Amino acid sequence: MTFLPEASSFAGRVDGLFYAMLGLSTVVVLGVFTTMLVFAIRFRRGRHVDRSGESHRELGIEMVWTLVPFAMFLAIFVWSIRLWIVMRTPPANASTIHVVGKQWMWEFEHPDGQREIDTLHVATGQPIRLVMISQDVIHDVSIPAFRVKQDVLPGRYTQLWFTPTRTGTYNLFCAEYCGTDHSRMGGVVVVQTPAGHARWLASHASGSLADQGRMLFTRFGCAGCHDAGSSVHAPRLDGLYGSTVPLADGRQVLADERYLHDAITLPGSEVAAGYAPLMPSYKDRIDEADILALVAYLKVRGTDREIPHAAR
Image (cartoon, rainbow, N blue to C red; front, side):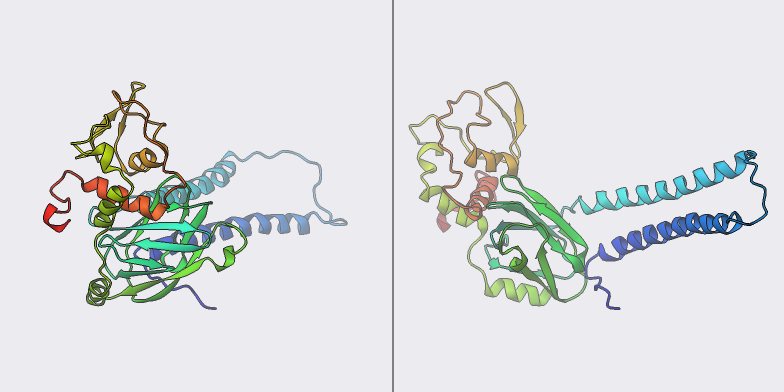
C-alpha cells in the first residue's frame, strides 16, 4: 500500500483527524454488529431461551451506550472545527499568489509578476496564500499531498493557504467537474528550498503585479475618469483599499478585494454616495488575470507602496 506523502504543515494533522474518525467509526460498527451477532446466535430458531419479552430496563447501561459515543463524536467535532479554523486563517506573513481557473488550465500570478501556467513554484517553510477566482465555471483546487482543497468560483474570490514542508513535485487537480476536458485540468506544485526558490524568482522577474495593473489602468482608459485632473465626476481611488465606502443606498462597505473586483465588473451594484452610475461594466471585456492586476494596483494606489513616478 502506498500512502500520500505529508508535504505540508497540515498533512499530519488532517491525517490524524481522519484516522481518529476512522478508528472511532470502526469501534462503533464493531460494537453494533457484535451485539447483533450475539443476539442472532442466542435467539436463533430452536434455541431454548426465555422469549417472554419481559422488559428489563438498566438505566446505567442505557446512559453509557448513549453518552459515551456522543462524547467521542463531540470530541471529533471540536477537533475538526479547531483544525478548520486554522486552515481558514492564513498568517500575516503568508505570501499571496493569485490564481485564475479557466477551461481548462490554471494561471498563477506571483507578487513580483512571475506568471505560470499549470505549474506553481513555492518554497519550503514559507506560508502561501492562494487568492482564487474562476474565469468561467466552478473549478476546485486540490493538492492531495498538502491535504488542501477549495472551490474556485466565478465572480467571487476564495482562498486557501498552506506551508510546504518537503521539497519535490506534487500533483494539483481540479476536483470539480468543469466540462469536457475536466480530467486534463491538472498541474504540479514544485516545492523548492528557500535559496532555490529565490533564484527561480529572480530568473523569472517580469515586473510586479501592481506595475502590470498600473499599465492596464492607463490602457483601459481608467485614468481619464478617476485621476485627479479628470473632468468626469468619478470617485478618487487614492488610498481607497481598506477604507469604508458610503453607498448611494445608505449602506457602507469595506473596500476589500471583493469590492474592487465588483467595482470593475459590476459597477452598478454598489454605487458610491454622491456619484451617478455612469461607469460601464468591464465584465467579459477583460479577463480575470487582468482584473487581478488592476486590483493589485488599486490596493497600493496613493500609498507609499505605489510605483514611483520615476519608474513609470
